[in-house]
Image (cartoon, rainbow, N blue to C red; front, top):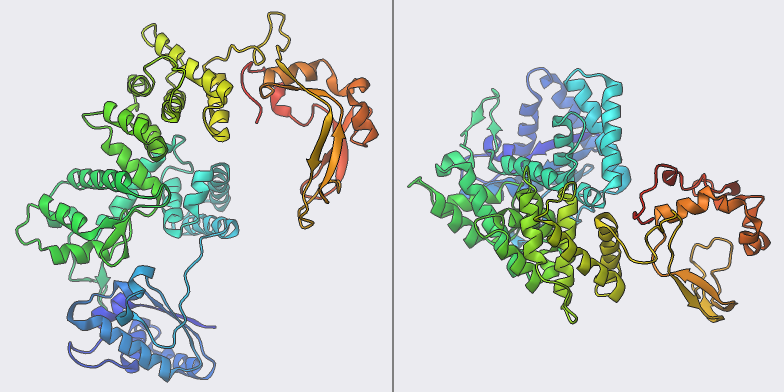
Length: 565
């Protein structure tokens, strides 16, 4: 189908009849002709014939961006309805933000309603490839270099679950690509810096005026940006948003998604900041409502940040103020799950260029020795203290003054690992943190002779239930279904996860080649002459490979305490 795109905001600005008159399909058609310009004016009759006889795809973009003033949106609806009747062979797509189209007076009769799904990986990859291919053209850059940068961005998104989640949103993927290109083909390695740069881009987009141009290309009714109009410094606007994010995060009933911010709170905050006596609340409402960016309307009189990440980051910025780190620590100890990410981001922001700020937060979070009956919040606070130090490089050189703090945190991490104080995911994170800070427990360290010191747990012989009754499960070897009972002889299992150093000792001793270790595996067809049968995920085939060629990473100088995941 031949696509024809119409920006409805532009139609409202220069394609409708005078205020008060009824619009029809001719007004929309005449606007399309006018948009062709003098160069393509002769094409108009052929276009009309094509659309009437064969049809086309008419893309009507941004119904929610048409100003409500002077009943212009009513006229736009009239023009669209008339045009659909005049061109019955065409298909029409009208876009609008979901919240706006929920109002009955906006709805177009006879149109089906659908909501865009998040991007899948194929769409994300295609977007990034096309983005950089376009940049290569408009900036006259080397095409191979552009493809290389696209590959770097895709790899960065695949490595990070957080970036992948952000990339599912077209607006945030666009910002991510913009930031990646602006930085010459990379993203900030630290997530706090990534969020800081992205927030700046979002704020710039939110503040910037929407420009509607006339036939001569000149702006019609040019608007100042938000800071200019309010006559207030942009820093003041940002501080207001930090405070609103903190309050919304604090008061949000759920621990997922973004919180609602009432229009009244946002508008009153902006009006209070303004040094312009001509600013009216109604104008502020119209300004912020029609701009997607750092805040977007998602309901009548309701706004939200585009992703919870930005809500958490702005709340973290607010909490790095005069009461840092005491207020933040108190919030974590009262409601750890709510403030977990906020605490880590606040610690990273405060620690930029000065790791002392990370130590201050760690001390506020974990300042007492391990208590016999500590609350889960205390254990979580200790974990966050350790993660704050690790993420900000504060452990590279620990001063004498900070050594007691580090030892206190290590004590809490040991307690988490040994007592099962937190959920499994957090216990694993505590084990990783303890590995970095120094784990001297029996069973995870190396003995003086360099061999693994492993603490074993005895498991008696007995039966257990194996597999599942679900015959649709993907199985390897065909032994997962149907569910059945299996008897095992007694065996031993390590009390703690195997470390790189421990497994490295097994490898360097030729463990894969010693047949007595592999009698059952050999009988099951999983081991043969020092080689282990592995499954090739891409081909779905099995083959035998040299043992030790699989975990190549551990051939590097071993890190004694790093746990294999």
